[in-house]
Length: 116
Length: 222
Ligand SMILES: Nc1nc2c(ncn2[C@@H]2O[C@H](COP(=O)(O)OP(=O)(O)O)[C@@H](O)[C@H]2O)c(=O)[nH]1
Ligand SMILES: [Mg+2]
Ligand SMILES: [Zn+2]
Ligand SMILES: [Zn+2]
Picture 1 (cartoon, rainbow over the protein chains, first blue to last red):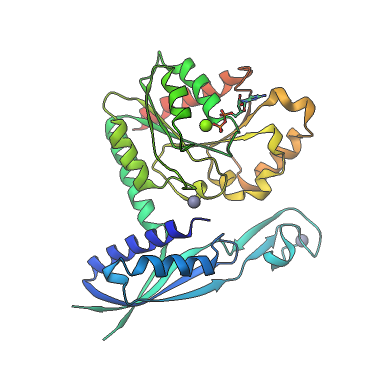
Picture 2: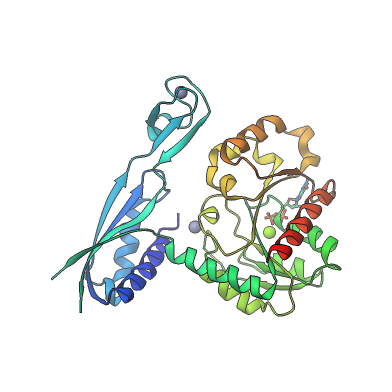
C-alpha cells in the first residue's frame, strides 16, 4: 500500500551506504521481501522503475527481489506451518496461540557496486 | 569492477535513524511526544480534544494533525487554544520520521512540554514507522471489534498503551472485553488496556493519569 514510500526509503539508505563506502555506481540491489510484508512486488517494481531514472546513483541499478516465506509457530504443539496457507490457526492442533516467525521482513540484503 | 556489499539493513533503517535524532532533540528540549494511531473514525480527534482540556493548565501543548487532507481536524483542535498545525499528508498512508521532523520544525518546539501527532487513520503501516515519539498510543473503538489484535498484530505489538474508545456503545456491539484482552496479550504482554469514552468522558481520567505519570517518570529519568 505504500510501495513508493518504501522505494524512497531504500534510496535514502543506499545513498548513505554509497557515501560511507565511496561508491560511485550501483549495479544491482537485492531486496528480501517477506510474503506477508504487505508489499506488492509488481507494484513495487513499477515504483522502482519510475523512481530510479530520477536518482543518479540508481539509474542503472538492476532490482533483484527475493521472497522470504511466511512461517508461523504454534506455541501449543510447537510445530511450524505456512502462514499463507493456514493463517493464524494452527492446522495441527487448531490452537490460536501462534506467532509469525518470519515473513514480514523488508531488507536490503546486498548491493553490487563500484567504488572510486 | 562491481563488488558485492552485504548490507542486511531493514528498508526503514534511514527512518529509524531520523526517529532516533528526533527523540534526542525532544529530550534536550524536555518535550514529551505522543504518536496517536488508530483507524479513521476511532476517535483520535475527540480524545485529543478531551486530553487537551484536561491537561492544558499543566502542560504547554502542541498538536500536529496528519489525519485528513482538509484542515477540519486542525480547526477543531485550534478551538482549544493550543498550538496546532495541519500536515499535508494528502494521499499518504503513514507519517515517517522525516515528515515528522519537518512537522516539528514547523510547529516549533520552543516552549512546548507536550506534543501530540494525530497520525493518519490506518492500523497497518503507521506501526512500521517510528516517528521518534516517546509514547505510541493506539485507539481501538468498540465497533471495530475485539478480533483486531489478530488482524493488525504489529500495531498492537508496538503500542505502549491500548485505548479502547466508545465504551458507551458496548451494549449494542458484541465486543467481549475478556476476549479482546486475550487477543491483545498474544501480541503484547505489557501494554495497559484502558477502556473509555471520548464522547461522554467516561473513564478518560484513567488515560489522563497514565499519561501524566508516564511523562513524570520520563522527566525524572531524562
Ligand atoms: N459513541 C461514541 N462516539 C464517539 C466517541 N468518540 C468519538 N466518537 C465519534 O466518532 C466519530 C469519529 O471521531 P473522530 O474523533 O473524528 O475520529 P478520528 O477519525 O479517529 O479522529 C465522531 O462522530 C465522534 O463524535 C465515543 O467515545 N463514543
Ligand atoms: Mg481525526
Ligand atoms: Zn499447534
Ligand atoms: Zn504507509
